[in-house]
Length: 475
Image (cartoon, rainbow, N blue to C red):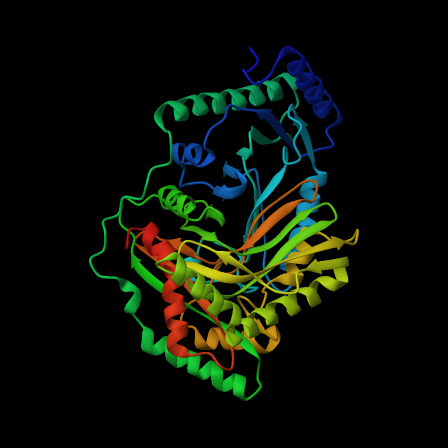
């Protein structure tokens, strides 16, 4: 059998040696094989090879030229309950120890990767989220990675059924050849992933349900005045017709072009609905013993002119309500990180993060971590932050389900990826939506504190819903 175009003669010999040893030892259950590939838009590749019957995944940070497209399931891990993060860590570690990796590229993210996320609450059982679990990480069958000018493909196989090295080698070569063929077909047919094709809505759906939601905000303020909690984040769900021709990848393509500074994500369980969005809020980025996170709380609309935009930025910077809300988040994140960190660094005053239609108070936070800290242990400690939950969380949590009239599911939960070396990144799944067969459900929330104005909070949720509505062409 001829070797695929990605492998030179020397690398092909190394691959054969790796496979011979793998089959001889029989001490690993899985193996990954990573090779360089030609430059291509990973979203384009996923769209052209979309398969709704199996796991589909996409992650991109456009401003950093980093993207992951993946499909299929070699291993699927799930958990629920109060120990779900610890359970997932143990299961992920077990898979990592049972996996051998071959790579002809020198890159920190080649090889084994776990893709997925977590629901907002510890348990998840709702018809709208029937295909999602409270915790879910998947090792895909194939993965395309872009990191700057680096492009690579990884295929993953269950090697336990291969007793003959030649049979396993033939399967690896077939898988790599198939990716070669798909890459060639995609590059000829596509230059960018297609745009959403739903018709423009004649009437904006943003006015629905204001009375009930404003009533919930007032009830929340009553609890704050009673000192039940200091802050709670209330969200609303807006449901609109999906349109038969709207592909998840097409909707995401429109989001990523408009929100270059956000983390764009798409998670599609087998034969399920698709959850996707473009979130401005990083929960954690983790590399060895260094962590980056951020406090993102306090919002204001963008101005129509440069002068108006500066005036609104000043209003946001001096707003007592927004500063108060933001400091809740900063202090809480620092407190949660202290058990894991040797040191924590941040600026004294928040910066302004400007997106297309909204600007936020924003404080980057960095930490040097202790050796025992892991991505999932820190996720368990940080989620949910007061930016999407409340403060104190234990007091605010029961009132979220009392005051909201929908199931959050994965909305405002952690979504992202981690690799075999322990590096990873998870974002908070806000500015997001769930695409069902007939409807799209979009979500937005805002922090309620003692001096919140219910009508102003309603308008803030409208502002945050607009990116998803626009992507579905509800302009």
